[in-house]
Image (cartoon, rainbow, N blue to C red; front, side, top):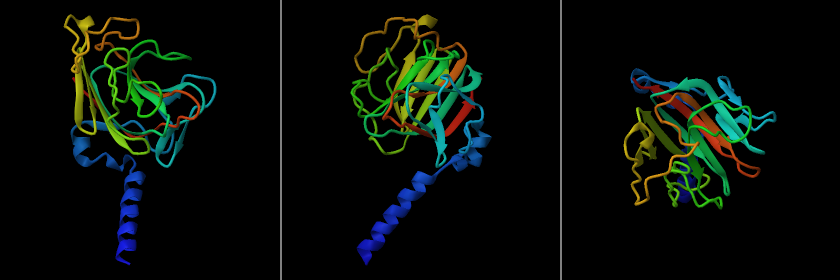
Length: 224
């Protein structure tokens, strides 16, 4: 009986974690300037850039499915913090874009992609600043929620996963040397890594069939 009760308690805790929605926006967060940009029920304020469906809302989360698609939050932002909870399934490849310009279709060609990938064949894993900072070990497992925290201010971009700082990238296009904390070389400037100081949109990525990334508790804090 004790073992059964322990299992039930464990399942109860798991169910509570899985069911958390926008209620995580606490009074303290509100006082600190955080706002929710996903209501847990609809895609109001968001827009997909392909003609077919690629995102839906299930159980309080945005779920990607099907072919390539990108879901943009339709407000241009400059200096801000972004927090969101993410979960991948086995073989899932996804990403979170910041400072991107709107495109009607295809992969965003401006801004910065923070990779979301635990077990897909691409060796570049979650947290990587795609084409710029490459991390080869995911800081999470598939089928578990993790929190990504992105801070864009001036010419810097900081990425944290589950409260651990992975790196602070300084944009060389702003007149400062790029910094890659794990021994990599200063990145080359390409059409994809425009200035961090520019304004742009946040976008969530659906990469390919079979991958079903999930996103919830999506909060923004605007910075001066």
